[in-house]
Image (cartoon, rainbow, N blue to C red; front, side, top):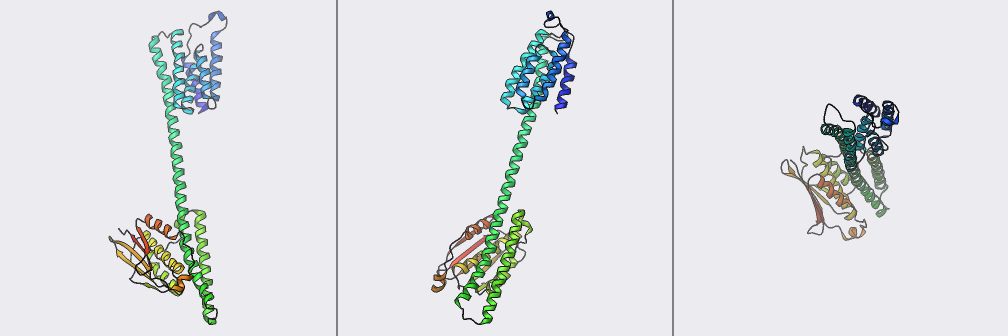
Length: 361
């Protein structure tokens, strides 16, 4: 661009230079040689236009009054001012650049056109350069704004991905660690249990710990890549395995109705997380209490997931010291992102219930 503007300035100066009456013939110098040197100097100044566009434009405007061959470099400098400076500064410099046009029309009149027409012509030429520069300036500002918005959207998408991974870590690890706590509590409560039962409980603890580490490793791998879609996600059909796993751990869980088939992925995954979080809360806050899982709905009617448990036994309730966490808040956010609604709270018999209503188009 610098080279192109330099060559255009040279070509403009040469094309517009004409043999006219010198401004100061009493100097005794060959005015054409002086004007050529001034024109070359003005073209060389264009190489400084990026760092100091306003200063270069002002110097070239001053030189263009006595030296006509500097006019091309002045027009290029006006373009640079419009590109690199604010529009207000550009308007001021452009207004100042009309003074050399007026002086040129008076000091070096063109025999082919009147002074007024010459002034209008110069105004249009310099206005075209300024207009082109303003277009480039606004286009660059627009591209910068678009790039900033794209970067912001990328950061927001990355944040949403990390929040999703955080929810996955809470759901997965909360479920596994609650199973570990349940079996470890059983061993602590029955140290005199038969050796077969102790070995079986220890094996379940070892397997649950191994699965927890494996799932944590998968989640952390996703977190590093910020691509949550690579990790296999559970579906509504996996609720059967979730219930069976909880029953193996010693819970009493009843699945009151067959799971609907062909549920959309997002709806099924959200329903699975609702059941998983609800069973985890039963193990933490109502140990020993049975849980009922009720899944109903169909296409067009929506999907309703309800998990309830009665009040735990007094001894079990007294031994439940698990603090309240952010599970329900995160679950409500997950259900909301799926377009559904989450309701939870105590039931009439002193128990607890969680109900999620999810859309099924």
